[in-house]
Length: 273
Length: 261
Image (tube, rainbow over all chains, first blue to last red):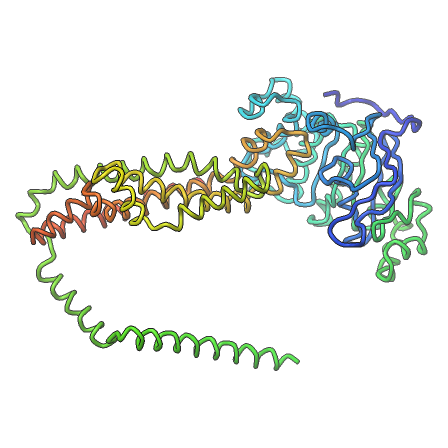
């Protein structure tokens, strides 16, 4: 529940480590094949790649919303692939998640949706009844203010715009007091203006609170602008892993295959910013 | 290429209409139904109804008795629906793809729902009559079982349709199964579920009349009694009261729906 954690970037012990992670759905071709990378605390990482490359699967394997077929994933010193149900729940409280379609309970108010982020810490009865402590409510209010949703606190979520809904999504993740936030295409359904607000908030979350952020993105230019590091995925394999400055036109061509011609224009934008 | 698609559409609709006509004519021929006689006797029925089937001054004396029976019928329909709702909600949570515990239970739950839904209400009433004879408990149980099957099915679809995304989000925060049910699934599905419950109540009031004919209870029995003793004015009063009640209930349901949706 500490918001002002301060920047704590000691890139020594990895917060998250994936080793030989492989995922097969039905069929012969793997959705993920031998994925290896580690993430230091406080990093802002973008995962880019064409549709169907396995970005979403990769993200969901980290908090085991999808079970990897083989391989090891460790988070904060814990081997998560072996966790039992109860321990998995405890682990998930430390990992926030943000979705393309916001995944809010539309019929409930903003504050109720934000407080859902605390459910992982609750007993069955307290969670079922929706009983939250005064501190939790205060913290929810603080986060809502921080994200500029002060006037929407008691509004039902189906009355919000896309950008506002996504900020509720961020607030729900933040109140979990997470060490890591996973974002699955957080701006894919938003207009450019709202998208910028969301990306700026995510950068603040990373820079000011020291929370590690992994974002799946479609737009190369956005990845270039915001990330400390970019991971390029194609056909379930990591084909690029490095700083934005190392992402050359050839590398983009490799990540996106034949689609790359259109993307050249976007690469030019990096120098314009 | 494009012209081919339009030609195909035209051909498809021609085939469709041809089949429809074939089915109609075939059914008429096989059952030896006389279409023109059917329509003319419908007209005759209306003429007879107009001259005999209306409430007169004398029939109004039975009004207090009929109203009491009607009230009983309404309450019974509501009770059957609400109790069915409780059981249907539980079974729907087991049966829905989003909230099921495992595939087998889900399949069993869906099976039970289909079974209860597909047995006609009248059949339920007849079967139950063997056990409980002609009593109001028979009518109540018949309505309850029919509603239970229908509501389970409707709730399963509502839950599947409405709450997938937020369920994923809540399980990603570490929320437990019951947290997810009470904080995401039920709040998301509730307006839709209430809408189904209201629909069920007004269907049940209509059906209670029919069940009452068989079980000898409620408003259905009143109708039967007056009709069979050739007291058509009283019987017509009963019908008119039922129609008014159903319309009123429907208006109330619509208002509630507008408010909650």
